[in-house]
Image (cartoon, rainbow, N blue to C red; front, side, top):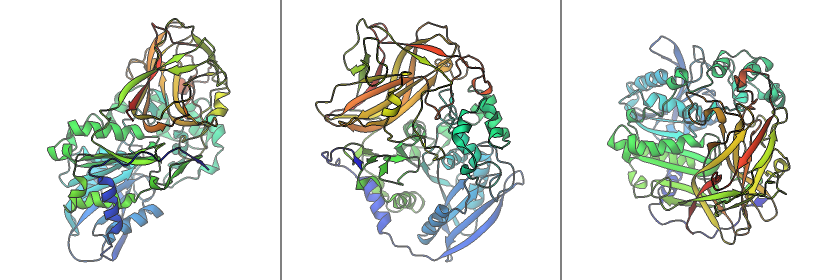
Length: 582
């Protein structure tokens, strides 16, 4: 078992709000029996009836309501457990199948009907005889999206949200991330095809990832998905995606929100963006004053494990998260116990490497110093045995690095097909043996280096193709050589200036790119090394750029690209690390 190094840092002093909240939830005993009603039909404004399972206290009176809306089966074991948990503690818990999914009527087209359906359901719940008119919503991933779309409709009954691993707007992550199609959506397309949950093991997923054109992958999987083809057709940030965006409507959201994500969450960006934006743009003073952010050492399935891959983050990694949900709703729906959510530290993060939770006053951290670590080489940075180095020293006159990117043999991204998790702490050494990526590594660190905050790569590069991709990956290299992935990102070259109006490359001409790697909190321990990889594919996390400049996901034509990376005084390629003083 591999463990990250060190337990030296003490927990920060302050409100300790999340720890206190979760402990309070864990200690609270339940007071009610549970009355269950299954397949309750709730009529939407267009006459379609959506199916909901309702768990409520088996007692007279009116109670606050917690609503979850999901495309993943409202009768699954997790929902049954959660519904019972809340009902025993004095809440009505409603879990509803999204339109066209499982027992709900209508047709499922991702995101399209969720705003109106969510709003109509909240309005219905607000006037039921067992409801006191105070509604909270909860859900993760697509269920997080559901909350935001509904919140922007302005129901006066909505008083609080718990937004878990919620993706940002569609073109920033799912299904396109900075213009590159997230090929992991093949798994999701199969999973939610038709009405019931589908078995991913019925397909050879690695073969499907390789299928061209991407637009007919549904047919290759034995499916016929109209929305899959719609997604491929709309391959720029056009009116279709703008209509399905929510991050331009923060001023319409008036609810206090608990934002929860993980450093290895595939949708992490949404929660950090939403937290920061709601502090400034939330639609009411109460909303702006009551935003909280919790980030653990977790994958998309938050709080599910203390160990990711070969890295064990220790016994504190898993918390009483359901108790945390309960405490948040107790404050904002029952208006009790709010002192646990006060104080001056609204952000709680898990610092990996130290393996400790820490309370913070803001996000990003004001005391984190953005520090450029520049690329250096004598022109042979290919692979781990190359001469690529990384340091805070700015480059002078240095030769370029080169590699050949062949879409027929794309640089791999280490993941488990069908796991619905696009990478965690996997050892990258098998990938780094290839010649189609560059590796830049620091010397062994003389002291611990804490990197906490958003991370971006500034890249100067040229290609002989009309379009291509550029990827960056931050790696923590352990003393025994284990190359632990920390995070990664991608930019499709044609979208370097605008997602709405793509611009093809001039072959051979250098251009400047920003690759967003999202955020982390990781202490690179003494003796470790910081590494940055540059490539032109991360397959099968993202679809291959075929380098032709044509409609990438609708084509089978392929061009091999010759890539050039610059790192000199005029083109100072670097990764910008937010370093926290120790």
